[in-house]
Image (cartoon, rainbow, N blue to C red; front, side, top):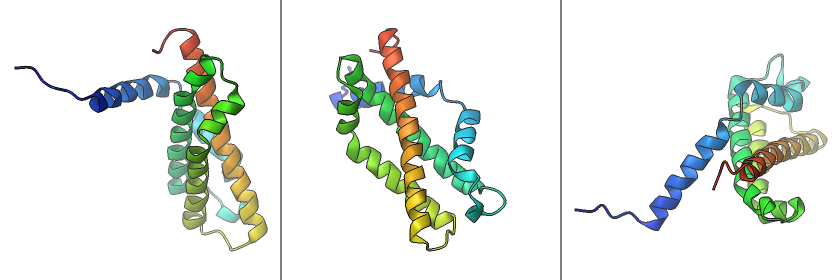
Length: 148
């Protein structure tokens, strides 16, 4: 008897396989360094950046990286990076908002509009940095024919 699989299941399997391959290029040390660059030097979080906040940043970094890698196929086929970025604008905005709200909630940040705006821009740059790194890595893999 044959096992029947749906197209949706096959796509999901292919997506998981792709994500595992692409994630091999991310190191935890690099993620820690980037989190330190963007957020940990902030005096409002106290002496040390909380492990909870760091793990939340890791989650958003990985999601942003994968988003860039997934959309790199459009760049490989000749679409400019600005157009590719426009394709995933809503997903990227969701990641930025998620990180911003996560830090506001768990960071116990004082209610200061000027500070919140600064924090939002740092979250935006953090997500953009990881998106671009994933995009460049995915595009490089396509060019080297490491992905289909």
